[in-house]
Image 1 (cartoon, helix red, strand yellow):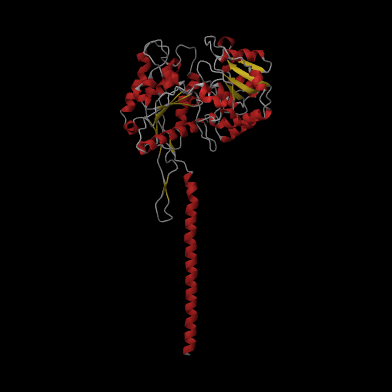
Image 2: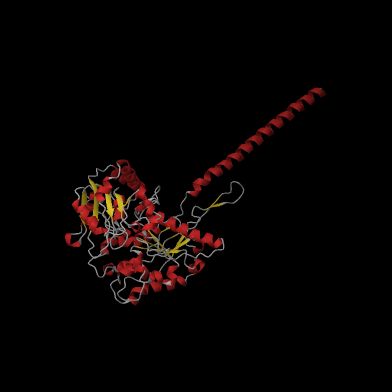
Amino acid sequence: MEKSMTGKCSHQLWLVILILFVLCLILFSFDYSIMMGANNEVPFSVKQRNPLIIVDNQTNSATNQSFTDKSLGTYRDIDPCSGRYIYVHDLPSRFNHDLLNKCRSLTRGTNSNMCPYMANLGIGPEIENSQGVLSSKNWFSTNQFLLEVIFHNKMKRYECLTNDSSLASAIFVPFYAGLDISQYLWNPNISVRDSSGKDLLKWLTERPEWKRMWGRDHFFVAGRISWDFRRKTDESSDWGTKFRFLPESKNMTMLSVEASSWNNDYAVPYPTNFHPLKDSEVLEWQRHVRSQNRSYLFTFAGAPRPDLNNSIRGVAIEQCRAARACKFIDCNVTNGNKCDDPVSVMRVFKSSVFCLQPPGDSYTRRSIFDSILAGCIPVFFHPGTAYAQYLWHLPRNGTNYSVYIPVKDVKLWKGNVEEILLGISKDKELAMREEVIGLIPRIVYANPRSKFEIFRDAFDVAVDGFLERVESLRRLIREGRDPSVGFADGDDYKYTFTQWERFE
């Protein structure tokens, strides 16, 4: 009897041990699954966007949020906007919105009326009938001078805006600098020309955000070339304002359609007429231009500049008119200025293999980006037209997407554009065109009412570029170095031919 009781207890003991082992195994598996689930949720959380609070007639802001993961028994903040927060100054309306209400006076000295172009958040009226030239909707009559308005409206939908300037990596100043100076460019009174810029700087320097980096984390956008803001003298006959030569302004970075040779100016693409709402429209357009039959070897859209003696533009027009393989689009106002019609320009550019881009009144041209949009390989004659300009948006190796024909002295140049272009192999041509078509997403400004999901548009690339610039300054500060060294220095060699001889 005693033996039988002992055996029974022994069996019960082993049964209890087995049950405890199974329970431990289940608990361990459950805990492990939670850990794995938490790890799998991290990438998903990183992709979440901060909600935007859209407010009429003032700078919009985002609510700062973070995700807290407690599954491992620790608190871990995962912030997808870390290092990307931007604070937008709510400027007095005289520096931006009031200018839009004065659209008829923004181009004094010319016959242009800017009012129609204010439609659709600055991208202009939609092109209703493209005669089959433009493959989809979202093509607009866009004025290049309204880039600052377009950029501001796109900034309102930026996913990492913040109300708390102490969290911001950068400060955006929505000053419509180009529209402001457009009112006074032909005014002989330089005090009037300079007044808005001085008033803006006074307002900015009194803000607490300025004192954090003395303005070096501030940036603004201009739809005019940077030289319009760099008047060197106080002579009334001298062009533009002296805004960029004012001490406080030197501490800010300006993004404009053409940069100067100073280090605090950066070039961003001219706005084209294509403002897609979504990625699929970009892909559709890329397929469209890739399939085009290009009957012209090269084309040039522009007007003569008889007052520019040492300019390749006149030679380009002469050679184009003399060549059967070239199509010339006359932009002369007296001849109707066909360049003001986006449909006419895109029809020819889509039918051309190469598009000539000689300098005109300044180094750059909007036509550069129209040609890229059409899949037409740009031909440059000066490094200042693109290679030294659009460092954030265009490839470092210019010969991958363009043809470079350096003309240092037009009086001594004996080259023939048609012969040079005919000498390019078909394989090289196809490779360059594919590179050009691949650039389309990053040189267009998506519709301000939307944002791409896959591509980075011209706005995104510009913002990324400036954030990287500010981070490099903060790195200098952390290393105990002076961030002002070289920040606003001039680069006398930036636009010289010798800097770009590797492309010849």
